[in-house]
Image 1: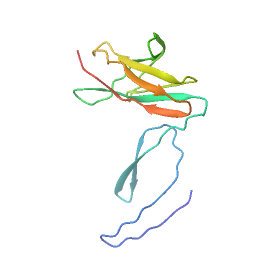
Image 2: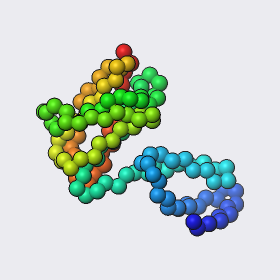
Image 3: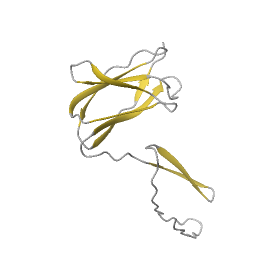
Image 4: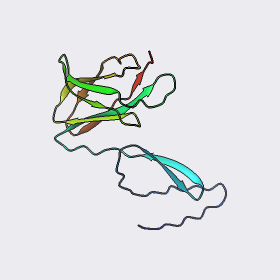
Length: 135
């Protein structure tokens, strides 16, 4: 790891760059000598895959919803796969498809989401966050 020291006078600013390889695509907080900042790490997508990912949250609280079922379908067809959200409300699908697809989200304590339609492109990450309304 390389160390860099920067000394600034009051009122001065300077951009600082660094490189890291995070384990998970998400927002990371950074603190240096009492100064706070953040950065978003994004997932790299293999050229032969499409990826859709996002966070499912509660419309009243804004908090993530754990164990919501997220369904993925080709346009006009029944879902071909599903996954559960994790403790942070995150979900992700990776597959070798492209074209028009949709997701919807279901949880027993919430009303189902509407279909969220998107165009999958190989080698691309599409982020779709979903907000559910409590029953």
